[in-house]
Image (cartoon, rainbow, N blue to C red; front, side, top):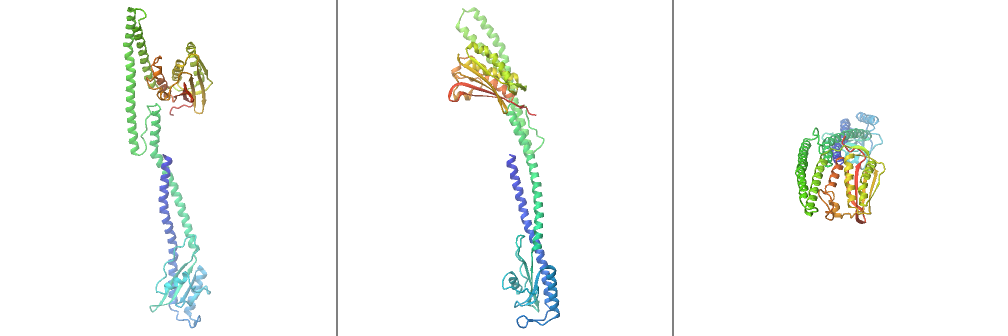
Length: 472
């Protein structure tokens, strides 16, 4: 979730910074240009004031009568050009120069200078030049009219280079970009802290949910940090987990208590059946059937009690040699398999894993017992231990009648037995107990056909972790 939320926040903050940065950059460039334009307006106004008192007028094409005020104006324009490098000139209405710097500068027939000159002839200053950006090499042209007795007698024109202005604008943009970069880094850091603060309770809730789903029902969510809504959600989750644990505890207690309480009257009933059998003729089928059902009921009660204890008990995880433990269980079941005429073959190399030795032994006993029980005489049961990656496995494969795909989906359910095997001894709880014992230690049990191409035989895979799965 963080990988989806964090880019969204970064994009939004980047959009906000860009939305603020672009207008600020445009404003900075416009401010630099406006400052230059205002300076040029002041300069043209000063030159217009000097040109206003020049009385000489052109006679002929370009000839003028020398005048002291005209000479002063010419010196000012030449000094202005020499100091600032800005071309400046005063032109009569006809376009004939009154004075200018450099001396060779004349009014062009077209272009920005000519347009500004034409606007100033209308008794108003030329309009502000278009914005010049740092990558453009345009010049700034400003023209002001020289008015005498209410008439425009001449126009002052300045043509300014923009190199320094563009350099200042670019420098300002670089500072602005650096500021935006710093702001973006700060925003990214804030986004990291914000997403961490917001999602930390979610991560804890997810981890706790996984712990509860894998059997660690005591796990709870810490509600010390995070938004108020998530803290309320964490408290509600803890309350729900407490209620679920209470219900499960009551269910287990009921099963355990019922199993325990029924054993005494059942034992008394079995004892009366035995006494009654002494009164009846030897080999009475009805009393033998009642005795068998009584013994089966006692086995069911014992299995129910074992299941309740298995679901309630905490796993005592240890780093053990799975191969050695499996070899012991194969040796223990060897006589039973031999008595039935079944070959029990074990390949148990040394492989370490974290497991509860008692729980794993009980699970292997149930699995091997089923394999031997359903394997016909003359066939074999193969027990193979292997380890790779993060898990170690014990595979028990038999050559019995096997199960259909529908039956494979139900195997391991409580009290479930295939309709084809109802006459074989058992309560249908052995594999359920094995699954509960393995799950308490982070293990699992899976079922499949012995061979994918044929339905005969069953392959049971017991998996245990090779690393300590307990929360630190």
